[in-house]
Amino acid sequence: MNLPNTITLARLVLTAGVFVCLEFAVERAPVFDSPYSMITHVTRAQPTLVWTAFVFFLIAAFTDFLDGYLARKWNLVTAFGRVADPFADKVLIAGSLVTLLQFPAATTVLTTWYVVIVIAREFLVTAIRGVVEASGKPFPADQLGKWKMVSQCWTVGALLTMVAGTDFWLWAAQWGFWVSLLLTVVSGVNYVWKARTILFGGAR
Image: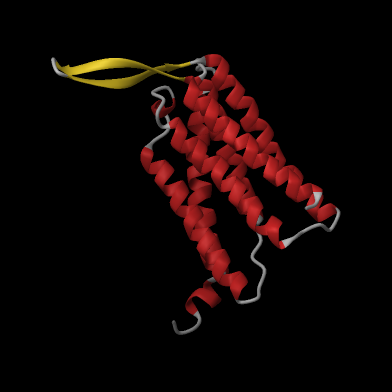
């Protein structure tokens, strides 16, 4: 267990902290849809807990750059790191987006179909990477995939500030939404294209 892998595991712990803070930040109010039936509706979030989640998220996002940089610089790339690093990224982004869907402030920008596209792309790329690496060829993340991650982190961070109660970063969330959507789709198609020889070159 080297330092880059330890940082990757720390990202998973920080990600769990994001989820816990957001879950405890939820404030619900009872809504009566009939005299005998009551449901709860999310009304707002506790700003302190949301800002704490925001800080955890920023640190976790930074470790995504740090662990990869150190692994390459010190030649500490391992099989565990190649699996755990993208896994931690997917949990951080997909989990944050799913959790944010419960907040009305976030859903002024965030949509369920966007979240579905993000998660579907991650399933697709994970499957492709498994097939390619099983054939004996490396399949690391490319520059387009890294920019996709940056744009998604930007979007989630901006959405968290909105949930915390400020609309100052609304423009950032809106731009991040469309830019990250474009990069998510394009990078997914790019991975399919890069693996086309293995995916479509032989009989099943």
